[in-house]
Length: 413
Image (cartoon, rainbow, N blue to C red; front, top):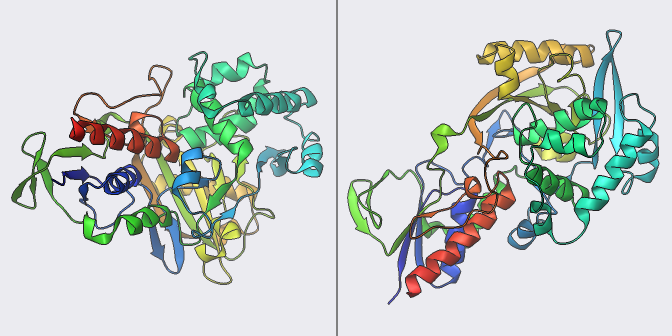
């Protein structure tokens, strides 16, 4: 007799969990309240621009992503490894390039000729890179349980490189303003960044969940569905009661308590403000009460993100940083962002046209030193998503695999 399973939520975890259950011979159906798949990984087309919901990238080094996604079919293109850093010096913006010395040796050697990363700091970066790349991925989750800031200080990094490089980069990744995220998560992300590339699919970030949805089959995905729980295995779906052998909650049941939020602003520019395919980090965000964590030009990486002859500029503002400056409204955020980029690009930014201001209120689960990073399904309460493991694509996919396996075992008992 064929078992039936309902998956509630068509985000990345829900789609992957359903796909694995389908492959196990289970009659699985996904119910999604929105009109699209992907959850937070969605893309909107505005005036010919592809606007991802927040600044999203895929990471080619994620082991599970390598198994799950066909990067070639997604037509991904990569950002340059490393980053550019901008600082204000005597009311004038100064730009430095911090390249990966192992993949860009000439640029990497020149990275030492800046004013915030000493040769000792650069050697420590190399030492850290070597340490996190050793062994299996699981090993980076072993060891102590400090926050990222304490870990960086323990590694001997100067306050200058922490404030001007690690802070804008990783607060923009972790979406919190004080580097309180667990050090194990930092080591994992740093390992992935040193082994792979940050890439964008040609059709926007939604192409990733779309690829899973295509494999699962549209007949198994039910959008615009209103679902309520009657009991653990019975659902009310659009006013009709239906029973299943198991139900998976592929959404964060504790989302209202997750406070990591982010503002993302998308601008239409006549030309790219950058002369490379790096992400631009704000070296002043911590020490000079800046607002922007980082700025990127997705259309420099994937030209399809903007119409011909235009550039898409995407600015990331960590919600906690905006809160600390008393900025709560979209208009206030836009004005402050424009004032900041005007210092960096005085000749061009005045003509940038705003395409969208996105406020993503529950952008990531809270992953601090107090939360274990290797959660597993408990009993028959099946829930998957990055909130069960760690806030990343890898966390979502691994959680989906763990729950799919648990459901299969449960149905075989």
